[in-house]
Length: 281
Image 1 (cartoon, helix red, strand yellow):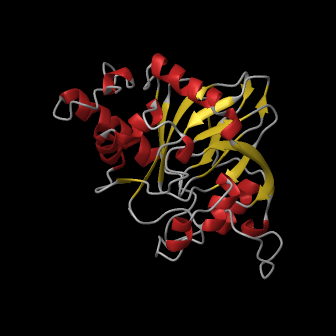
Image 2 (spheres, rainbow, N blue to C red):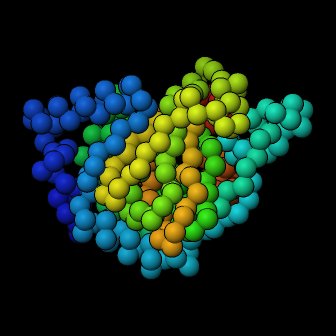
């Protein structure tokens, strides 16, 4: 069984020592970044050997990845012809990408071990200042790998869960930048006008990240619209996506699950009508 120190760079990020000055300084930094930007990047958070094991897991399971080439709007909802044509719910963009869903990961894989760490849940909770915080119950999307090959593109979208971590496992030769519009909407305001501006190419609110292998990103993906730019070159982009939520019962809507992960399970339909945060997706 893997230990925390075989996965996480504890010398630089002592998340296992919550009473220490170093831990307090670290969480003060992550809180500041998240409050100002809706995003925080911690370089070399995951150790190289662990990153290699994650890469090997993806390589071994390439035949189990669900690849899609379809169109979606930022909310992964169906077209609503009662709305004007320029409404963001009616702006559909082609997405080409793949997911190695959470239900096909090895039980004792580095990514599952990372996700099960109580120290990680505590650290993410302290960083976001969200108490209590939960790991996600969605059996497909709780901690998948996203895989993008040459010419793949993941257009602007919002996440179905509040908070997502990203661990870059394999970096592309070129392209594959993570771009986001911080806190472009809130639970009280969909901000359709601002969302439309970004969809139509306005970059005033857009920020771009060039993540490196082993970097950890903490991100408020429910409220910050984001995308991954087109992959260029021969090296594919692998990224692990552990997800966290405020509500332990709420999971992806069936339509979202089908569009992204290729299927919806009975639990998605059973929990479809659980009251969420009031947002349209």
